[in-house]
Image 1 (tube, rainbow, N blue to C red):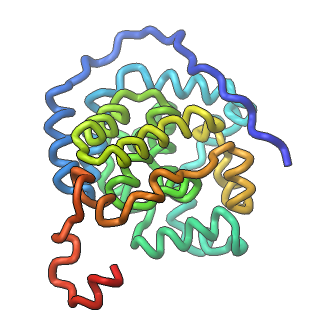
Image 2 (spheres, helix red, strand yellow):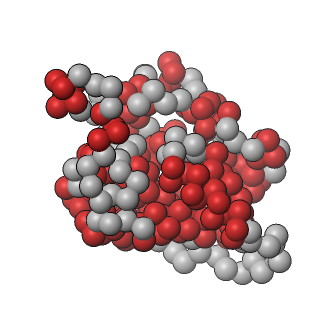
Length: 264
């Protein structure tokens, strides 16, 4: 099996002045996201407030990848593919596609959910906005590839991983802001490990995901040099879901019968 191409430094030749970063808006949005991890509109608000030149840097980096020019020319809308449930469920057992189908079914997720909460301007026919939509649409695929679940710590780890892949300050602000307020050193180490995994792996935004879906999951992880996430896996589920990662969260099981709570 062909190895993934080596990582290259992101292209920093684009020095155009961009909109001023709005740190105050980003901070207010982060507080809302910490209070409700399902309020993913706040993620878009933070990313938009702190984007700077990262999107252009990454788009130029995509064009430098072996398949990048073709992907940019074809500009496939991955959301359209991932919303096609028949296509998603057509992949053989053990593949990335089959794991994605199981993950989204179990978590009651769909690509159109992210599309629905996306700011309207992101839908414009522009190469950089297409790239931004691409990053949006592969978020849940990255959950599958990296092994991070959808508990709060898993989401923070994915965000830290995304920062290492894209260098977008918004991703660093989210993951760093939540990790720094954590009362659990093990959770902080899990976030740091997620960042280091992203630094050491192949550059995932440059992958052809229509092909990746057909790969055996473990083979894809090996090819992309993703490794495992042992620190995250060792954090108890109730701690992963607590906003401070510091103690069990009884509210998670409020309203459950004792037997249900024990099984949760």
